[in-house]
Image (cartoon, rainbow, N blue to C red):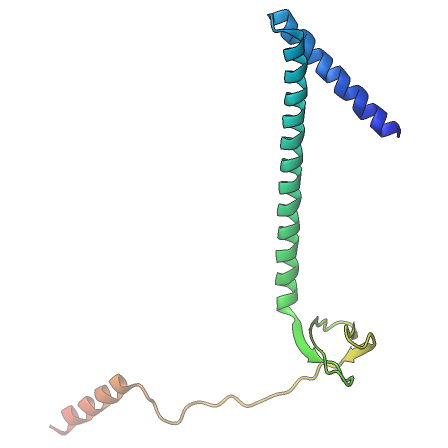
Length: 143
């Protein structure tokens, strides 16, 4: 209730100041009061629009940063419950990984396993231009 009275008092004071200023210029008092109310309304809506746009921008920026961080270390897992719900869960390598399944509402542990594999190289070169060069070189050597 206290803030409502403060806002009403501020509204009356600002409207009064605008009305007095405009009547000193020679504008009718009723028009001056109406202009004061309209200017306050317009400025208030412009201010709210600016604040909303700024907050929306900041929220989008935080969401993008969150998604960027999640994309670095995350995996899609399937809950071992009967519903086999799939979820994308962030993975941390420096602590145990747990998540709460959205379907069965149980806490599920994730175990990260590391595997190794040999790197192989192709047996034959499939680039025909290098094969042609090799054949041309061999033909030039024979002649």
